[in-house]
Amino acid sequence: MTQVGGMDGSNLIRVTPVLYAGDVDKAAAFFAGTLGFHVGFRSGAYAYVFRETAAFRIFEGANPQPTDRMTAYIDVEDIGALWAEMKDALEALEPGAFEGPLDRVYGQRELIVRMPDGGLLVFGQTL
Image (cartoon, rainbow, N blue to C red; front, side, top):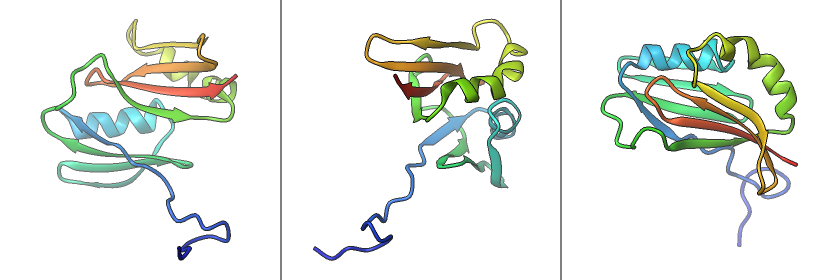
């Protein structure tokens, strides 16, 4: 098998889940203002947001996924540092907009954030 990419043979950089939002401006602003992502591109009904090795492609339109379901899971090295960074912005949201950080029986410490359209974004660190 031929290897392409870095010295270790890696070629895949990241997975960028596609999210659907009723209002792409509101979703991009939430990711940037509350979660510390950068808006890499914004045009019409589309936005691309990224932070370190995590990224999302957001399209305006009907959400094909039911709300109250996990939309994406982002593994992190230090959930405490992430919580310290996001704490004030998350606590300024309406009640029930986030949960955690909390330890799970399956060996993860998680911070669960409800996005404006209801889907759940989970940040997790292996304990």
